[in-house]
Image (tube, rainbow, N blue to C red; front, side, top):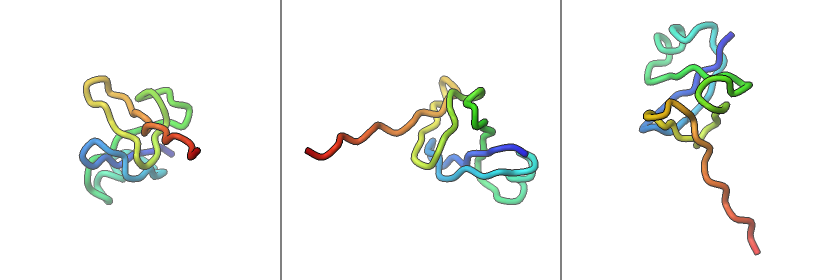
Length: 69
């Protein structure tokens, strides 16, 4: 099984488990990128709200929000 992140306007909107990357592209449409839970490709394992840095081919986590005072 593989993990694939759906990218819309360089933002991850969902991550799914799929038998192959081709299957998810063919059946769900849109732009999908392979990712791995151990972060061994594209820098880290993404989640919804992560951005995709095309120049460096990595996922970037969203900025952390400050804790309320």
